[in-house]
Amino acid sequence: MTRQKPDGTHDHPYSALNLRLALAGFGLVFAGVLAVISFAFGLTWLGWFSVLLMAVTVVDLIVISRRRRQRRREEHGAPHSLFE
Image (cartoon, rainbow, N blue to C red; front, side, top):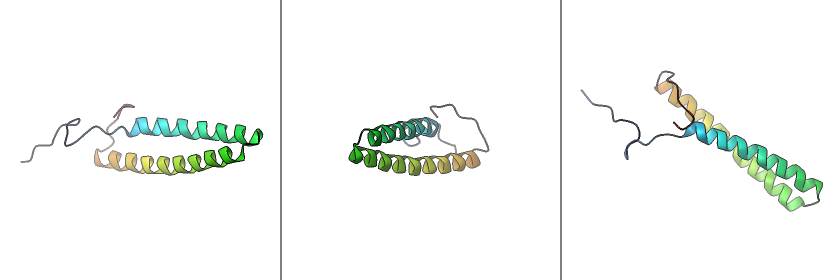
């Protein structure tokens, strides 16, 4: 019989996927607002940089959601707080 390691150890750290999801959502909104303001004031280089940040954030959101789905399947739907 193998004993499962507890969460939060050096070998098996907590996964902050929910917190990462919230921060990525905030980053997407912030970069979107920054892009609109930058283009409105004629700072096209900053606007395009913000669009690039938005694209990276969307990819991060996709990766996070896939990992959350995988974790939910592995743990049979166990609830998680924002910091787990």
